[in-house]
Amino acid sequence: MRALIYLLSILAILIGIASIFLPNKERQHQLKKSTSLESIVGPNLPPSQAESIREEVPVTSTSPDRKNNYLTDSWDDVYRRYKASLDQDARLHLTSKLASMAQNSNGIDINPLALSKLLDIATNDDDDEVRSYAVMNYARIADAESALKLLRSARENGTMDHESYHSELARVYLRSEFPESEGISIIDEIASSKDTYTAEVIFSTIPYTELSHLSASEKEKLGAYLDNNQPAFSSVFSSMGITDALFYKDWILSTAILATGQHGSEKIVTYLLNRFKNGFPDAREAVSLAMTDPFRQLERSEDVRALRKLIWDETLLYAESYPDNAVIQTLGISPELESMHQR
Image (spheres, rainbow, N blue to C red):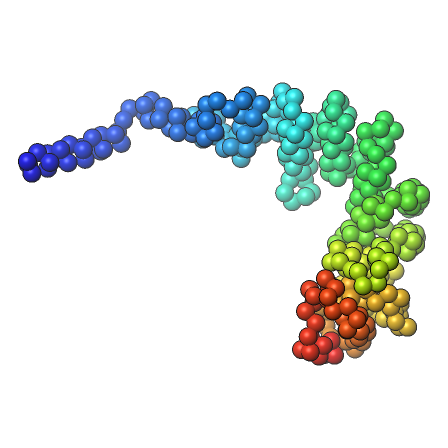
């Protein structure tokens, strides 16, 4: 009996070894079975859902001339699938993928062929939402002249609504160099929209964008526009959220950058000291700067220490009155923290 068990064990080992050396076609057949879409999601999936999942699931191929369709799709593969799809979500997804292929990861080099297909979607898709989405993506990648031409066409034919048009116009303006007269005209157009979201786009972009291409007149005009579009706090003085703090921080830094022509320098600190030398009109402005602390990387000069003290004195007074405020809770006001603002 022991001898029989031993012989069976030896036979099983030999069969296992032999399976490694199966003919190549048989091994390919097994691999295909293990990596088919049906083996992952089941054979009875409705065709529309199967196609949607097929876009997301990598398919391993045994053929040397077939590439992985998830990681190495070419832009024309993506465009062909877009043309073949009738599902809005799939078309939006493929439009986004095509847009990512139109601009290399360095954010500079452009694939003109992929960009041309994105333009085709932006001008010819039958679905307003898909077309608008393609316009937005195209405008953020293409050169300024081409972007403006498409944006204005999209506004005139109703592809883009008032808010979407002006916010994308603002993005194109901030990243591009225009003749001064044209730049001033674009700012006037943006200002005439009286659109809160576009103002948010502008002051959320300026602190993180190089603006040396803007003329002094453009910066002055843009600064005046922001002065008229300060983000509003709640009318309830005790109410203030983290988003309020972040918006205010970006807005006040944007006004300082436009006024001084500097990013992250002591000139901004001096500007803010002069602006708030008689105190903050609203204590929540100080609380916003205390929470975000945009000056922490600057050397602790006399002006920096003075500004931080001004900010924290006002913040601590607000904290005494409203200790349960969400931002005050985030700051974690404590005796130790109170001493820090004096350093």
